[in-house]
Length: 297
Ligand SMILES: NCc1[nH]cc(CCC(=O)O)c1CC(=O)O
Image 1 (tube, rainbow, N blue to C red):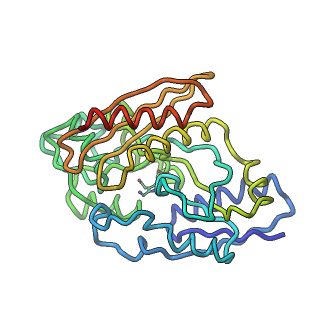
Image 2: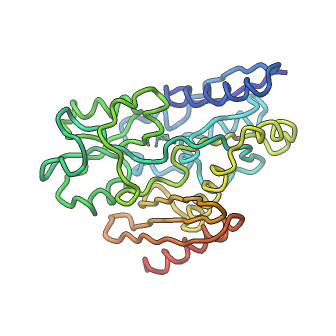
């Protein structure tokens, strides 16, 4: 039996895909795997800020087409890049254990953390979620819009004369650049993107055997967190034009979901939290979305 796994071609995407394949190989010794690299629209547009393109699923459409046509059996994506609405005929299968969900600062030599950046310092990020939360804590900072893959963004510290950039810890750890991390941003300051650090294994809905197999590498706690955080995302009907963050903490049989939502120009930013019990992830996600939407009005 052979499973063809579709992936974007970036270093991070390929690392993620091979990480999943390694876990699967350990469990299913006689299954063969082949990686198929697929170029997406998002990979072709380089110099435009993502929130200016504003196309949901910019990095996934081409991959989803190959799944539907049976050209690949499964696809590995960063869950946080997946639209909240699932494409007809497709589904997510098991969700492997989440990597670090935090955002981090990669700073110019000599600077150690957010409080150490000089007044008026320049920080690069293309994400409104990161931008407006940073500005809430440090209104004096100048946030510069950047994009590109992880390596490119780190290089922009030099090229664009920045004090630093904000990135996901997960991405840096996965590509072996953990030592570039200057400091971790506490979720109290910057709430991560819904599902940040988690992967999505996407398959065609009718592939029942494959689904059963992939569910064997699913992590229960991650599943709970992602269910709650993505229900919140769906509930607020969010896009990449507005700041949205969510983080679900699981403590024994309780879940604590925190969410943040703002408007396009960051003039309003509402952060709230709801508690509940395991099993009610989706209800809690939608409830938190309603609560925050009401406050934003
Ligand atoms: N938006 C791009 C993207 N998609 C997933 C990751 C990192 C891995 C993850 O967050 O799961 C990144 C890079 C980043 O935000 O720094």
